[in-house]
Amino acid sequence: MKRILIPAGGAILATGLLAAGLAGSASAAGDVATDPMAKSAADAKAIAQYWAESNGAALKAATESNVWDKSDVAKLQSKGGYSADTKPGSAKPIGQETKKTVKVQNVNLPKTIGKVFFVNSKGEKKWCSATSVQSKYRNLVSTAGHCVYDTAGNADVMSKWVFVPGYYQGKSPWGIYVGKQAFTHYDFDVYEDYDRDYAFVTVYNGIQLGGGTAKQVSKSEFDKYQGVKDAKDVEISRAEFRQCKLDPTSTTACWVKRGSKSEPTGPDYPGAEVAKVEVPAATYKDAKVGKGNGFKFGEPVTEIVTDSQAAAYKKAQEADAKKYPATVVQDARGNWTITHYFVQQWQKPGSDTKFYKTVFYIIEGFAKDAGRLGDNVGGQGVAWNQPTGKYVRVFGYPAAAHPDGNKNFTGITPKWCYGKTSKKLVGSAAKKIEEHVALKCSMTEGADGGPWLVNYSNSKRLGYVNGVTSTFNDQDANGRVDYISSPYFDGETAAIYKSASNVWSGKIL
Image 1 (cartoon, helix red, strand yellow):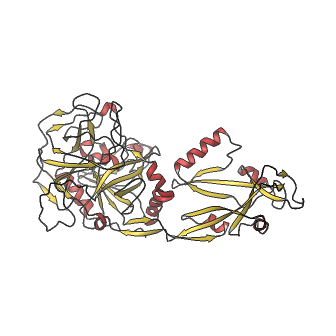
Image 2 (cartoon, one colour; image 1 turned 180 degrees about the vertical axis):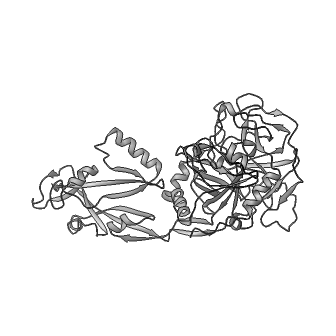
Image 3 (cartoon, helix red, strand yellow; image 1 turned 135 degrees about the vertical axis):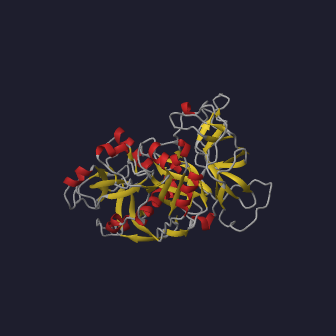
């Protein structure tokens, strides 16, 4: 829901669900608005596992942020530039607090950049660009405000929010960093004013998911285990099959893949073997326990699946419910499971009948603490009240097509732009934009949230964040993005940053 914020004057400003009598929680000190994200280490661990399991399937399924449409890609208006509200200021990058900069001409990508992943109010997996920045506890991420707060859904902060530095095709080389607390400007938080479209997010220590030790367990232990688990089907001999038990306390469950020459029969036929037939939950519930056709075949088998796997199964189920009778369920934390139910079908063995056993495993030691974000990848400095007309390097992961349909970018690898910021400002009544700083650049959505770095050292791969990509614009009206813009980082931005940079987050594990 929308946040309720109390400004210095004491008047309460609220939107969203307050009219229905529902109250959210947030705090504001002057211009600073804060919102909780993952509220506990247990919640954070579940979020990290959501994105990482099945070899990063959810990460790979995410698409670029899409808050901008063709009507938003407007021509820039020149209005003379933004005025600083206080003296220029900055916080130095991590590791450069007492070091001098050296001019180098080579172009190197910063180690600090990556993608933030989240689930929006529509249930869609999305991503933006972001970077690690300097902070007292080396735990802070800078990105766009619309990559943290769900303006489109008039909702709270994005669900399952994580930062993955160095992300590449489902891989998280430095770990997954789950958001703990979001810091945005009061005007963006309450009024959705894109002149303040920036955010700073504290993150827990990173978590590395992978490896671990597989332990073979019984079917009942497998079903109860809440962590990462796996089940494998292994072909066995007829003799091994006859020694199997139809027992949930067993570490294996045996079954038959019927041969073409097999014929249905009863359990008392000499040499008869039992096959499992999948049925709906109601049929299984009504089935008897014992030895006979149509009787229960062991306990139900539940598998954890990704959103896309669940959607694919439900679609197949709509087309042929008899062939796909399993039960598909989403729990309160958004995790999907598919549960299969089986009954017995006894048969005479055919010459091409095959026998299998399902072996159950839980994965122990799968997750480990990856340490603090800034210790692993460093952090850019932050600068505010800088004059326009300065050279900046902008980094991000552009992926969307241009308004004319041309798709130059894939979002797989980061791209960059370089040039002087202009005094052009963007006018957009829908987004409440009156004062932005612009840069000639053709990057498209997916790059939003990416850092604008002044005084960037290519040898150290460090500079000062002096903006974040917010909008995408078509200056020459040819259907192609040719300018991007950022909110101007002023003294109010500095207040948001300083509030966030002194907040501790801690470990998940």
